[in-house]
Image (tube, rainbow, N blue to C red; front, side, top):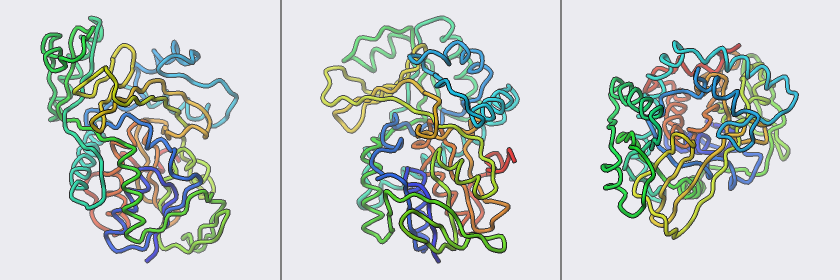
Length: 381
């Protein structure tokens, strides 16, 4: 049986890993060379603590202040775009307290599932991740963010996640190499992190060495459809027969889904990061600056990565942002051999391994490890 996966980011490669291990002949097709997608440049968090979706009432209020400032943590690139307007209206409609609360459990569940999957990858020969379970600190400087941290800590504990509020003195004792200008921190002990570059490169090499076909620099141009199935995938370089198709092409999934009679409200989000090696500035634990929305991650022994602004842009941006902050994971109702796995926004690396496991379970007609109804890819159709 042949499975075609469209997209070679962490979600696509993870899906390839699980499908191949369950006996499928797998081909991964990507429009780029697989060496520069957003799965490489993220903060590396494997974070069940990220149970709050991007679409929240707070981001709407703050977003209007930030959105036209290209130096802000959340910037919308000005342009006239029907798809952006469509996404924006749905985003605002989704940003309600009720929907944020409803999203918490599924985001927690897929976060924990994915973390367990990454832990299991450590026993797979050839896959290297620099995986560390040290938690994630959220530093705060102001009384406003300190109060927010208290509420966020309480919410996390209600969900069964290990979280603790630390004073400045407690944080400084854990980070003796660096002088910190903070009031304290919220420490999510439930979180872990990886070095994304190592994950992606070793996973790709493992797949190639074990018989998965990877086709870089090959763009999907269309599909042959017959009697409620997709029989072939057409690309700039050939035609592929498929028994199952997984659409995991990041922000490009929107255009491909439209060819398959499915509406996926989504925009591209471009993130920015810089990685320093052997820096004199040391951190023992990954951290987020709550006021500045900057991510700091010590990685792979001698590296530290700084990540910042999310720029909502055209499809040339890589991070696929859904309209409600939840990924699109599940089967198509229109084509019985089509599945979707996209829309993970800034948490693609965090949720990538778990998404791959879920896709394999769906393809193999197994009971999914969690309730996938909140991630229904056709929820906006």
